[in-house]
Length: 45
Image (tube, one colour):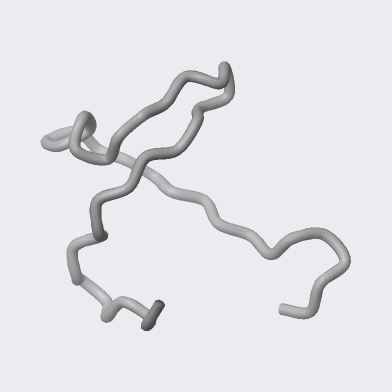
């Protein structure tokens, strides 16, 4: 998957939250959202 440009819209996706419930990006439209991404443990990057 190519890198997104700064300011580009994120593609639609769905991920489990801390309680295991699925959350869709579309469900958060109009709200402030912070995404935190980090490299997997013991991997370069």
